Amino acid sequence: MTDLIEMIGIEKSFAGIRALQTASLSIRPGEVHAIIGQNGAGKSTLIKILTGVYRRDAGEVRMNGAPLAISTPREAQDAGIATIYQELSLVPLRSVTENVVMGYEPRTRLGLIDWKAAHARTREILARFGVEIDVTRQLGSYSTAIQQLVAIARAVSLDARLVIMDEATSSLDDQEIATLFSVVRSLKAAGVAVIYISHFLNELYQVCDRVTIMRDGRSVATHEVAQTTKLGLVSEMLGRDAGEIEAAGLTALSGGHGDPGEVLLEARGMRSKTGLRDTSFSIRKREIVGLGGLLGSGRTEAARAVFGLDPLAEGEVRHHSGAPVDTPAQAIALGMGFLTEDRKADGIIPHMSVRENITLALLPRLTRMGMVDRERERKLVAHYIEALQIKTSGMEQPIRELSGGNQQKVLLARWLALEPEILILDEPTRGVDVGAKFEIQSIIRKQVAEGLAVLLISSEFEELVEGADRIVVLQDGRSVSELQNPGVTEGALINAIAHHHERSAA
Image 1: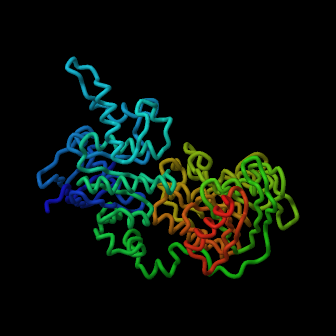
Image 2: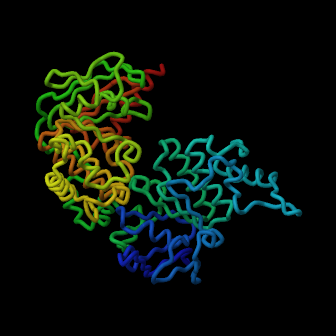
Image 3: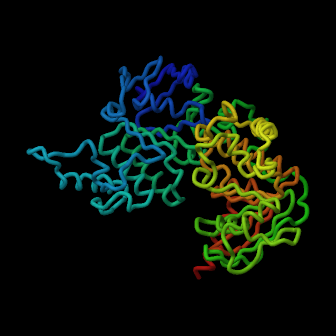
């Protein structure tokens, strides 16, 4: 069988820095092919060459065995290559139909747009995916999942032979992801090939046929997904021995850091206007406590209340010193830190440097007589850049230029520099690649072994099961159950959540 797409020996450099080095990729007709690798591995650059955003410096691209010359995204679309980016390139203030047919509108004999035909075509394509909506409504009035499906409908309307999905599930819930996977399988059944880029390795085993691993600008291996293991894929992504990774505890944070010590913080009967109804738990020294539950269960609301960000209507949060925690200032003074869920909106200051972002919370301790001790500041920043292996050209580099994983490590450094007793981590590995995830988890594990207490929130049940010493299950703002590691499985956690949902619905 002739490959639909062949990319052979692709080279690309930016300002003398090699982004791709003899990279290769082959896509079969009607297959779902994953591309994985750490941030900076070359995935995006390779795709942008295929879609005409960048021009290759060397190498060859073929479609159905014939040379393919693409220099613009429009030429890629005309060749049957459609791309659905993580940040959807749609126009929310335009209708669903306008987004689907934009640039390829059907015309009447007089040259006018045939809206009747356009609406009918849009409805017909969406119906293939089981979606029946008002296509004349503004796209922005629909959910992210619907917008994703509209982006796919646009690709289908262009008779795409290859659809590229870049982190398509990053902002979808479980039900929406299941719908998207159904659409992917429909595309495959229709003979359309899909390139699937994702940080979530579990997704590969649900929809992908083959996987290509990239590292340092090279394609290091291609495998049948059914013949791979998660550990093996991570090993090739990182260029490290699988045994070494397993010994280091790739995903397991819990265990190995000593018995839990004294209780450092207690939350009792928390109720709030943000949705907490009766939430209670404690956190001990050298312990990771996970908060588990479905979307809307109150996980983030509980974390914010514990840190004093949201006031309580009833209940209390009390530090082991006996002091209450009512405000973030009190929390920080008592040795607490809070890594927020949305690093872009609530974490990083994008136009500030790595140095400024790390020392932002520490400035009062670095200041004397109104002057910042720059030498001490630089020594501290250099220490954390090295200790956390933050990949940066220097401490003065703007943080916005760093990868997501390295931005997250900068935010971790910000709080670790305060030498906290308790660290609240809300989705600490969301949106980072597997390599950065491994490094962040290793940092957390080391800090816990040295005495840190962690409150961990994750929407990934696997991360909670393998990462927490105890898991407090939340449902509708209440703490309804507690699971103790070792011995907790994903099935046990799911059953605990489902059991209490069934009871509340009865």
